[in-house]
Image (cartoon, rainbow, N blue to C red; front, top):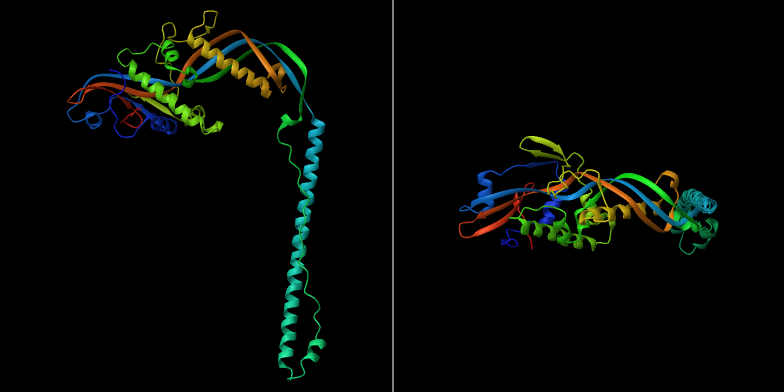
Length: 362
């Protein structure tokens, strides 16, 4: 059928993802006949339907061994404490100066009020004096000079130590071997192109082009979000934030927001304890690359644990010598692909179960 041959309204993949991460409950079941007719047209006839739990995130359990090398950072605790102490002392002194200034301002306001009252009283006396005898009451009622408003002079506040990287010196070579087990999300965007995605799953042949359209729309959306240049605003960050109590309902059966992989690849039906070897498949390579990136990130942030607990590395190199993984669950976008005739011609559509709308792909 090729790509989608329709544009119904403006409901698109971005709308579907927004509804997915904000939903409390997702019901995955056929729509009513009335709902189908509303979406597809009053004269439409459905020829075939296919439910597709499109995986947005793969939750991967890793069992790895790796060699690492890098320059270990030595944290200048003495320098950190010295600068932090200087900042705290300056902050406390400024606080004292502000409190002192407030006291002086209260005294100033009181003195100013007394001065204004005395000035008003003298002016009244002068006004009541006989004409030609104004100077005598002026000199007989001295009020002095008006009080001077106190000024606030604060000390320049030094930069507060926040970034420990500024106090870390990398001068000690370090290398070794570690074993690690952890769970990590692999996002659909890690496949980078449809060819990689296709080779990693067994896709429904009749709706393959439609699945491709969904995938490519997601990649375009990733590019749009990446232009915001903030880590918390990337598509991947958005996908990491669904409601924790999200529930899926399949014909009355309830599951939490994670379900097993639905787009199965031959020999990947369960994907348990799969070993990445020299003849690694596309999915193996993607999973291993994400694993390697996370290990490097953990080493460079001092969060790898074990014998490297709180040790930060720089210029890090990692060689994974063993990588076994399982993908027990995914975070899916539930869709229903429809092969139908709208009364004039055959069409292919994709229905978002959450919004109960046809997705418009451009």
